[in-house]
Structures are given as C-alpha cells and as structure tokens.
Amino acid sequence: MNRLFFIGFICSLLFFTSCSSGKGSMARGDYYDATVQAASRLRGNPDHKKSRETLRISYPLAVELIETDVKNKMAANDPMKWAHAVGSYERLNRLAEEINRSPGARRIVPNPKTYHAQISDARANAAKESYDLGVTEMMKGNRQDFRRAYRHFQNVQRFDPNYRDAIDMAREAKFQATVKVVTLPVEVDSRLNINAFDFQENLENWLSTKYKDQEFLEFYTPARFQLEGLPFADHDLIVRFSNIRPGRPTIKKAVQKLEKDSVVTGERTVRGVTVPIYETVKAEATTFTKQLEFVVNVMILVRDSRTEAQVSSQAFDAKYIWTSEWATVNGHELALTEAIKTLAGKKEETPPGAQKLFNDFCTENFPDISRRIERIYSSY
Image 1 (cartoon, rainbow, N blue to C red):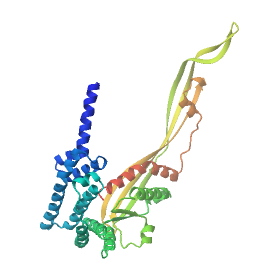
Image 2 (image 1 turned 60 degrees about the horizontal axis):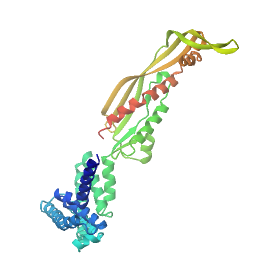
Image 3 (image 1 turned 30 degrees about the vertical axis):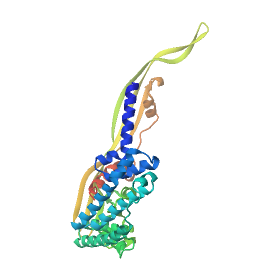
C-alpha cells in the first residue's frame, strides 16, 4: 500500500511539475498558455530549468502565431478583423506583462514586445467596424437582426465608449429586439360574481421575478406600459377563466374496527404491590369525507398586440377539490389511533363560498398555469 501511494505521489508530482512549467501546454501546441504557465512558475522559482526552457521556446512561437493570425484575418477581409485584432494584441500584451512581473522570466526574455500603439489603432478601427455592422443589421429589420445589432453596438462601447451615438443605437436595437408583453387583466366568468385580483397579483409578481434577467423579453402591466409611454407592444397575454362548475357536495363514509392488545387500562394491588392491568381494548370509528369538486376551464391566450392575430392558445380544464373530514367513535378511547382522535375532534363543515373556492383553485393550479406560460416563452 505504501509503495502504491509513493508511486502515485511521484506521478502526481511529475504531472503537476509538467503542467506548471508549461511543458504540457507546449506539447499540445498551446504556446500562449505555455508561456503564461512558465512565467508564473519562474516568478516563484527563478531557476526552474524546465520552465526556463519552455519559455525560451514558447514565447517567440506564441507571438508569431498570434501575429500571423491577425495578418491572415486582415488579408481575408474578415468582417470583424479589427475586433479580432484588439483581442489578439491584448493577449500579446498580457504575455509581456506576465514576463515583466517575473524576474526569472525576464532573464530569458529581457524585452518582451508590447503592442500599445497597435491596440490604440485597432480599437479606433474596431469601433467603426462594429458600428457599421450594427447599422447594417438594423436595416434588415428582423428581430434576430436587431439582437445582432445590439451586440455590435455593445462592442462599439467596449472599444470606444464615446463613439458617435452608439449608446442610443444600442438602446434602440435592444428595444426593437425585445419582445414586449402586456399582461392584460385576468378575465373571469361573471355569472358567479367572483374576481381574480389575487391571481392577477401573483401572476404579475411571478412574471417580474421569473423574467427579471431575461435580456430580450419584458413583461408589462397595462399601467406600467402606459406610464413608460412605449410606442407599441408585441404581445398581449390573457388568462381567462370560464365555464366555472362548482359541483354538489358528496359524502363518503367508512367504518373501521379498532383493537389493541395488552393496553394498560388501570392498576390494582396484589399482596401489597401495585401492578398494571392489561386488557384488549376495542372501538369502532366512522370516518366521513365530504368533498366538492370545483372545475374551471382555463385559457392562456397570446395575441399580437397590433394585429390581434393569435400567437398561442391553450385551453384546458383544471379542478380543485375542497375536502372536509371528521369522525364519530364508539368504544374504548385507548383503542383509537392519533389520526382518528384528530378527526373525532372535528365537525362537518359547510363548503365555502364561490370566491374562496376560486381563490383556492387558483392557488393550487398556479404552478401548472405558470409552467404553461413559461413553455410558451421558452424560445424567446
């Protein structure tokens, strides 16, 4: 066991040494990571032989590969060649920084090359490049195109925060790319004189929490939509409760025979000693279950706000079962179970009114309704 542990330890040490020196990365052709790892190792151990050798070979190769990649993209007229150049020059500068922060690495590479002038020029060109790409996407007019335009204008701000009207263009692109949904007041069958105020509040709270960080999907109440003065919405979301059918109460009865052996029912004295009395105790419990089924037809409708064309529609029956349970008992109390004792302490209840039944229905069915809405907007 000790021998196996020792061999494992040596293998792990060799693997760690190889990786931390950058030799493994260099063997895979990743000269950038090899340089970073070697410089980092030499920062703590300036005389580490493998790291010195790795750095000596990997750094010039990393510089050559990155510079060649920039030139190739420029020659191929890549549409994002300047954005790519910025990233490449930033990587090259990081190599110089890693080496300059490591005295051991500076012995191998005394003057690592920096690219500050190239980055400045590339940033200016990249800002224009990204701006032009954003405008091109905006002109196409499709929602996906607006999303791409928004990304390009974000890049403009990264390259040059003050470039032209990039901030306003990004704001407009995001507005056009975002699906704006107005949650209209919940509709309820008016025959029963009930309201859906609680459900409406729960739905609006859930939407605002669930989609708080959704980049291109925004839900509005009618009041908020009007307050913000938005020129248009994309969708109207309507939840409609109709054909509400409160059933008649039904009562089911069940009789249970209860019996327990060796139950202490008292005490007696035998030759001056008090001893317990054990008996078999019996009882009969009649349990009653009173239920009322409350069935509602639910429709989740999404329509185009401008044309009123149907985008999505789901209609389904959902139900809530109101329940009241109680019990009557005859016989010895010690034969009763705890559940029967609890029921025996209850009495028959009268079903609540339609509003209370509807509120309880909404509470029980809200998870299913919200999941259905979530599926509708899963692709947005």
